[in-house]
Image (cartoon, rainbow, N blue to C red; front, side, top):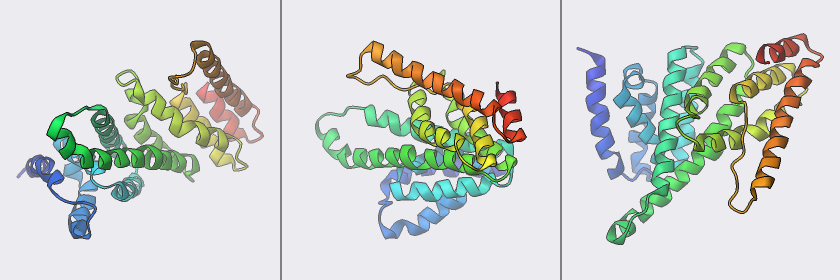
Length: 254
C-alpha cells in the first residue's frame, strides 16, 4: 500500500496522544528513540501530517531538542534539497507553535492545570531559539564543503528567511541568531568560513533589530541605521578580501 497512508494515520494518532506522556522521565526513552527514527523516516518527513507530528516533538522535552537537531544535521549530509525544505518547515512550525502558545492567556482552573505545560513549553522555546537555530547557523558558517553549507542555508531559508512577510517576529529571531555569529565569522582567519559568512549574510539581509519597549523611535532608527551600514560595510570589505574566492562570492552576493 501507500507508505504515506500509514504515516498520516500514525501521525494523527501521535498528535492526539504525545501530551499524555511524561517525556522528562527515563521511562520515555524508548518512545524518544522511536521519535528520533521518525525524524529520518522518508514517508514521515514527506507527508504534511508527519511534519506536524515531528514539529510537535520539539515541545516535549528541552533536552530532547538537541537530539532532534543532531538527526536533522546528519540527514542534511545526504544533500537532498527537498529534505532541507521539509526540515526547515518542521523547525518553523515548532517555533511558531511554541511562540503562539506562550502568548495564550488562560483563566481559572485551566490556568492552574496548564501552568506546568506552559513552563515546559517556555523551556522548549528557549532551547530552539538559543540552541537549535544558533547551532544550525554556526554549522553553516563552519561547513567545510559548499554542498553542506548550501543544504544548511536552504534549511534556514525554509525555517526563517522565507517566512518574513508572513511572520514579523521572524525578523527578531533572524537578527538574534545571526548577528553575533555572522559578523564574527566575517573576521575569521579561515577563508572558507569568511566565504560562508558572506553567502549567509546575503541570504539573511537585512538584519533588523526589534524595537525595545523603552527605546525611543529615534534611538531605534539610529541603531537600525548603524546595523544596516555595518552589513553594507561587511559586503564591501568582502570585495577587498585577499582570497579570490571570497571576493567572487561577495561580488555575486551584491
